[in-house]
Image 1 (cartoon, rainbow, N blue to C red):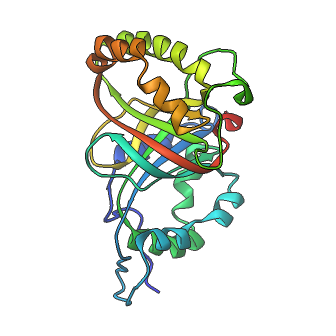
Image 2 (image 1 turned 135 degrees about the vertical axis):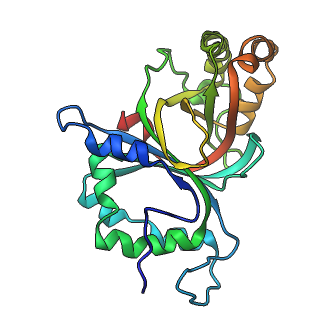
Length: 267
């Protein structure tokens, strides 16, 4: 099987400057990095070696999943979820979100040169139509009293289970307005059982489409109904118009059904 170079993938543009900065970082300054992956799949996997393929892009990505390689270098998958609804952000329409915590930036880069990773990467190259991969570090998260989900108006149920709402944010110079919005929205979300899993500062984008991003936020709600109650709250809606809309230059907001969510414990 032909190996696929990870240096020039078909599904994204490599940020060579960021790669150089990560590789050049002194060991004493390096440390954990959370790689947030937004993934859009091909309808049918397209292998560059010309093999006939009847599997979907998602199935090819499942074949790629380099869990043994990640374990060997001390990395861990801390979030995986399928995008149920994309509320904001037109294109691409993302299919899946994943987060991998690496022990260092250098370990992330050195992984791509491993033979076992290269062999698996052929499946990712075949299955992925587009991706954004952002190197992130944790932000200070709000301190609040978590509500017991058994005591809220819209607890999780078999027909309306837990969801994670993910915000990918490009902010402008009016970042203070975003902070004002977050305070008001948080006050409205807490009674509805929100769990702030993790807010991340985007250090840079290693793979993408040349757009720059500033933050990624993971907020988990006990149910879709609970999230809808926050979404329709008049005070939150007023704060959105007054603060959020003028602070954001670009965004994706997605309702995601998680199969793995260890974001909070990984920070």
